[in-house]
Amino acid sequence: MRKTLVLLGLALAIPTAVLAHHGWGSYDAANPITVQGPIETLKYENPHAQITVKTPAKVWIVTLAPTSRMQIRGAPAEFLAVGKTVSAYGYPSTVEKDEMRAERITIDGKTIELR
Amino acid sequence: MLDEAPQLLVALEQSAFASAIRQSTWAYMTANVGHILALMLFISSVAIMDARLLGAFAATPPAGVVRPARRCAALGLLLMALTGSMLFSAEATHVATNPVFQIKASLIGLGVLNAVLAGRLLGSALDRTPAFMPLPKSVRACAMLSLSIWFATAACGRLIAYF
Image (cartoon, rainbow over all chains, first blue to last red; front, side, top):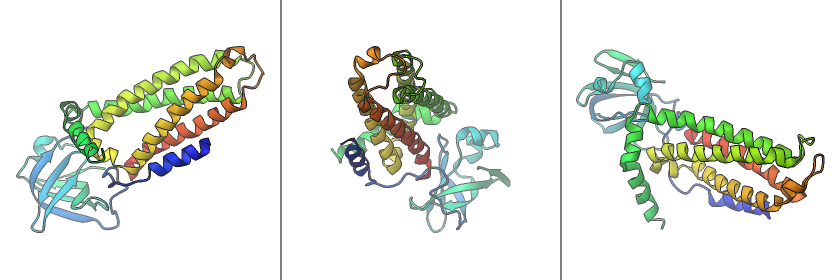
């Protein structure tokens, strides 16, 4: 009876909705890309800072690191000001369209490692 | 209901509370660390309690182990709920739709139900059972299930980040 309930619970919990973007697991590390262009928006927030970057083809959502790490590595919010040109090397999301997770970013000739 | 749920999550994620957690340098980190510390308190208390119900530490009458362990487990669960709701609200829409989180939430529900059931089945046997006397089979089954459910819950918690 109890076993049946457990199985029932698991069955009910079977995924029906989209996957979350989080961690490095849902990014295609085999196909790294470089996204370059002006920063359009900045969300300097936890658990991961995020910028949108305009490229000729489309606008990329670039997921960065937790804000505490960004600050320690020398990338405070001002470093990522809207309008600056960024070059982000990272991996496209396998779940979220037009989203990538940056391994490192370069702004004003300064490269910051994010992992 | 299904149509309302996502809007509720969006509202939660956009609330002042959730924004404050995201925008603070320390809040999310503190909640994250606190969640793990609370988990350690919870899972260790649960393990001691369930081990006693299953027959370990038999020289001590069960009431002497189960009661204090249950209080610590309840405190651990409360602290996990507090820190967990902070982590959840910061990313409500993404977390709620994560399949591993959905399994985790179901497991928490099952775990709490199982704990309530175990308490009912145990009843006055907790105080009547002397040292070295096995507890009822139904109670031992609940203890076994409790260990499985809570360890699986902890595993799911960590796995949310990978799916």
